[in-house]
Amino acid sequence: VHYLLGGLGITVGVSIISVIGSLIFGSFIGIIIYEKIPFLSRYVSIINDVIRNLPLLLIIFFVYFVFPVIGIYLPVFWATVIAMTVFESTMLAEIIRGGLLAIPIGQTEGARSVGMTNQQALLNIILPQAIKKMIPPIISQLISLVKDTSLAVGIVLAEMTFRGQII
Image (cartoon, rainbow, N blue to C red; front, side, top):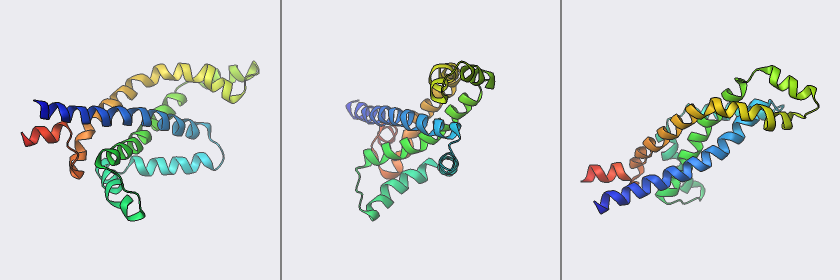
């Protein structure tokens, strides 16, 4: 039982750190893509699409096995956290971008007509409305993140699923 609980601790640790990181980076990426900043938004969108379409296991292997080649040595736990954060950030960026696009353009036009800047309109008008639309898919994606921790067995992270298989 203690062996399984230790695995649960690892699963929860990877999940919590990855959730926090991916919410931060995913929000940042999603807003950059939504804002259509010349050049930057296009390049960020292309990189986001490429990473989003790679299998998570490939990203985990890349972080764990290729980073040491370039001189970055990471323990299994942190390699998993970084890989999952990168992958989930791209997924959350699309959810956030879609949530922002779901708000009618009239909301932005109304904010601009009363003298708000684009940033003020985004923070005070668009984002609060979009968050309500984004909550269900974000929760679903974060649940998927917890389940995906079992993929780290490929680099021998002794999380709960791995320890359950051993027992």
